[in-house]
Image (cartoon, rainbow, N blue to C red; front, top):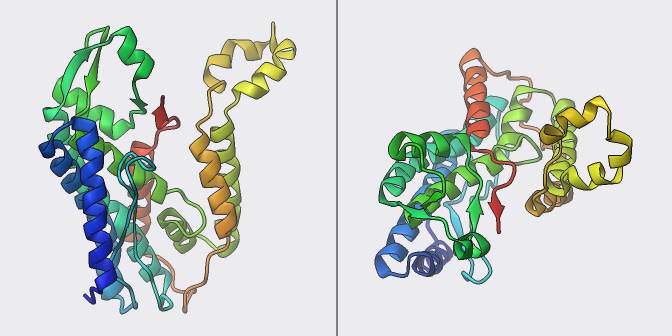
Length: 300
């Protein structure tokens, strides 16, 4: 592994900014250290999954670059991490393995972090002030399952106050979901390109951008505009299902994917198809994506 000074400097700065983020959350040095260690463990494991398989296939690939961010800008003290691939990838099989290795490694790292974090979390009683000024996180299926298994049913009027370690685990699921979006050159886009043709990858990318815009804007504005037409119709019986608020972050992601482009660079030998084992792993990746995704990640 060719670690350069820039990798070390960025990691140390990210270590400091994530420590500050954890310190602001929990109000103690231990919360800062535990949050930073948990989050960087998940992010680092994800990127090392890509790195190890990139090296396995002889790809020129860099160690992870961690991106620090002041806690006032990013509440988690980082914008994530990334690796750079500097040489073409030989086949779709290699592309698939490199692409899927990161999310699978990341989810395997996030689950024990969530378990530890939930055990460190506390159940608190809701008050008017806590509801007014609180930050509510969406609950992905995987996170909900682990929390329910450990804590059980939370009484009405109470809520689970997440320990910084549990929050780091939640971020791990969110990052995994973002990376597995089947569009562009995200990990999910690599998997989609490896399974299907370039044409279907581009179509899927455009469809995902449209869906993200819908999730970002929400259907409430549309429903309010056409409310007079829907009143008294069969549609009004199902409005609780199809009408939802948007989360502006999805609009940002739709714009980012549009800016980066919907095309995927070809591998050197695109004609090499995936085998049955890799197609099965693609279904596993889809289930992981569903388990990590939440339409409204953050509500203030």
